[in-house]
Amino acid sequence: MEFNQESNNEQDSNGETTDEENNQSTMQQWLQDNLRIIVSIFIVVVIAAGIYSYSNRSQNVDQKDQTQQSDVLKDLTKDNGNTDAATANSDTNAADKANTADKTSSVTTSQETDQSFIETAGKGDGTTKLARKALADYLEKNSDSSLTPEHKIYIEDFLRKNVGHKGGVRVGTSVEFSKSLIADAITKSKNLSAGQLKNLHKYAVRVPSLS
Image (cartoon, rainbow, N blue to C red; front, side, top):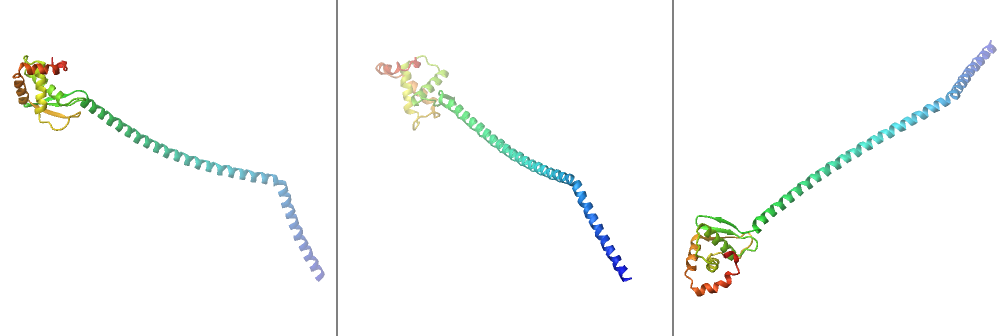
């Protein structure tokens, strides 16, 4: 009985060993049969993972580049806007200065009030020229055909000396000549002697506009 029992135990043990060996053999056979498929699947998975990772990285890089480009464009637009604004302001200021220069540097300008003529100097004007213009403005309103170029030379010199303007005359300087002062100068010129008028002739011929 004991022998039979031991024999049975050995058989069971051998049976279990055989089953394990069979299972291992079957597993090995399955692996050998399907190794290519497994390796292929693994390679496909690795490649797909690599493509997915590269795609995401490229997308992130593109988005970053687009963001940077957008920021650069905004900065350029802002800079261009500021530059355009600065250029427009500079051009406007230059135009204003040019207009002001044209107004103040071309010719003498005049303004009449009830009591006087206000002459504003242009380029190259002095007190004598302003007095000459004031006399011309006065004679436009109060014509006097008896005045000769010699009389007018005396009048403008009288006005220059008695206008009361202090300091030099620059472009844009305004000098006021009262109408009463001009009338007084005209009266005095008519009291000049023939000799005095003759002496003034050499100055009068230098100013053709007085004729």
